[in-house]
Length: 204
Image (tube, rainbow, N blue to C red; front, side, top):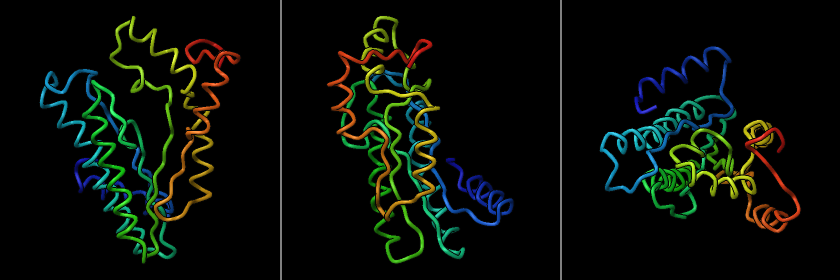
């Protein structure tokens, strides 16, 4: 994703196979180890910025240009994540900084594209139970984190079909499709004492 030529090759292959591309989702992402910035090796920082920000810049540029050249345009979706809303979490500030940058990029590109056939929008899956979410915790830290995850997180197979349907339904230029909204967060915390969830066991 950090190589413009490879991103362009992906577009060309997909457009060649399907005839057109109506939706392009910039979803590739990685994180650093859960450590203070001063303890992270430069290579980890460069990898995160390359994948999470430079990759989205390249992907967005290729997709907007390609969609503008096809009849009916299309929609470019950029994936939100921890830090998109400005919230900070110690130990993950490099990841959060790239997501904050992606939010700015998406809003700015929507403004640049407002008079054309291409829409640019935010796609927010919320807290999804993946390796990226649970990596690099000590056993004690993970035990504490699981209490929050079991309230706010969801499994991939729960969130993905909903997001796919919303993507296909579309949104306005500059809009946001979000699974975990503020009202949903509030309802889940209020219901937590009465609704036990175990995302790490057999039952959700």
